[in-house]
Length: 640
Image 1 (spheres, rainbow, N blue to C red):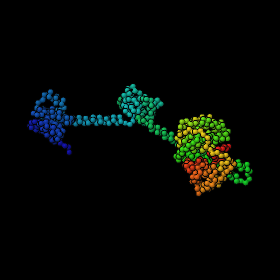
Image 2 (spheres, rainbow, N blue to C red; image 1 turned 30 degrees about the vertical axis):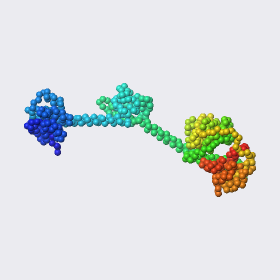
Image 3 (tube, helix red, strand yellow; image 1 turned 135 degrees about the horizontal axis):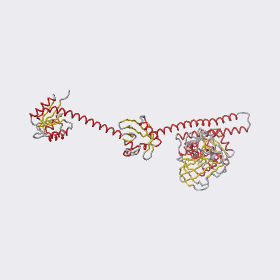
Image 4 (cartoon, rainbow, N blue to C red; image 1 turned 120 degrees about the vertical axis):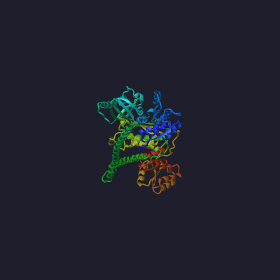
């Protein structure tokens, strides 16, 4: 049920008020009315009665219609307001209408009051609805403008290829101000990278011909500063009386494309890695099976009864060479595994640099000459220094680099240079070998990578030497640099930060004793290993004793105090070499003890040295290696 129409009447004469109500009821059959005659009463009625229309006498003793009109408009500008007056001239009528009255009715023509109020109510409703629609439109436009301005994408409107609207994000993307972009002579192609312009022009020309492509398009934009950015544009078209409007929503996809390119690169690298791993595993299989085949084959031949002595020596040499090759393969795999799993520990020791480099020099001079290469060791600069670093790891790095040079050099020379530069040890290994192609130089230190995969068919070995060298150098805080030219040769430079200490030049600390008269105790529980070492040393040394465990070794050292050297196996029954060494050191601090073991891990070496060993040698023990170790502690010389 509709509520009754409420009309407030401001009138000081009761008779005129009743007359007005009677006329209003003729037009509005069901209404509520309230009559007031003072300003306070009028204000109170507006607040509590909440009328739909006001009819006010123009002139009252303490109040007038214009004041009532003013109060009404302040409260509700869309309130219907009709002036009712006893007499009104033209000027008064104009004044009332200008003040905002909807109509005025002379009391002599009071029959007009009902229709006048009805017409005014209808007009006010129209005005109110129009106002609301305008406000809604403004609100909608404000919301739309806010969405455009606050969008994370650039928004651009073109009217026949001329920019009519652009938001702030577009300004950020292209670095042009909105004022610059909206200039009539601004060319849209200024925002497009030259290589992308033909495709954009073609699309705009098709649109002018009525061929619309409402789809996403990727292209490259050009900023004001000249920066190229990757963009994605969603385009739509609207035909209007003014012309064709092109709406473009532009998104910066530079980062997304960078991620995409990174994923593609990672995928390619993974595919390459898989290929390299497969090649590596095939090579490892070859490197294990080939020497194993040689060992087993020649062992079977040696067991034949009808072969002469010359063939036996030849077969034994083949077995030895194959064994060394198999051992090197297994060693490389173990070392790489320990580097990859971060199991290597840094063990600093004080190293006599001159002695250390001369040891390396002597060994590789022999190897180079055996291959018919010239050995060029530029170590003439005095290396009278002690350096403090991990001796075993440094030695392994140099051995890998030098063996690598030997492997890939078939003629010419290999060489080594060494010097101390401040707190850096610098060692260069040079060769005149096959060299490395420029496009492969950044990859050869990566695991499972060689300069050329086909090289595995021409050169034996796992191809892990450089990978292991770099890993060891990084453990020591150093780095390896490469210079190489294909067909000319390569230079690898090790730069190793380490503490250095100038060495005082003095007479050597080696023991005064004839080399061949050194008394040696070999301690090993394996009968084969014991026999091998006795045979290995018996041609040079006259006094060789043996023990099969740590207990026997201690008793012999106590009963034979003039023993000069102990070759101590570390893993034995009853008492291991670590414990035996500690016991011997409790009563003999002078005897030289060199540990010998099949275990080549850093922690084993450290444990042996901590127990009191002077040095360490890894099985299988070669005559050259063991004699170098002995020569390190005793005066004498030998020829390998």
